[in-house]
Length: 107
Image (cartoon, rainbow, N blue to C red; front, side, top):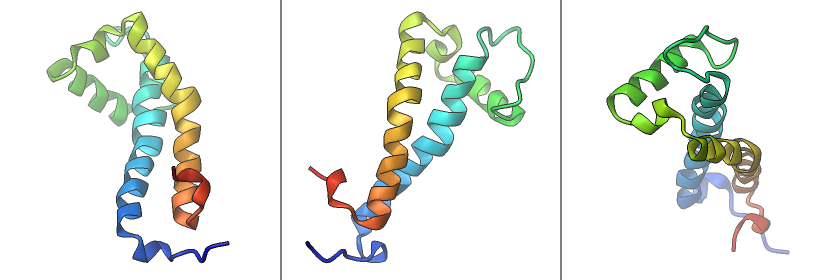
């Protein structure tokens, strides 16, 4: 068994950990959740989650930069479900693995 290098000394792992953290906490379970709970961005009531300011931010982004986000076609919704069901749990596992220096996360 190899000796684990402390996380503070693995600088590349910091970048990977940051990527997985942002995707888990912000993209997958806030931005993507908004896509699933609000079917019509022009006619909705604010749900409990995500928070209203996140919904407003997502709608601002969609109106100004990403029309597919606002149109919500079926293919788009399927990518959101894949992100929720598969990538979200992977991001959580990756955060743990990189923090603890586990080899099973690496190729």
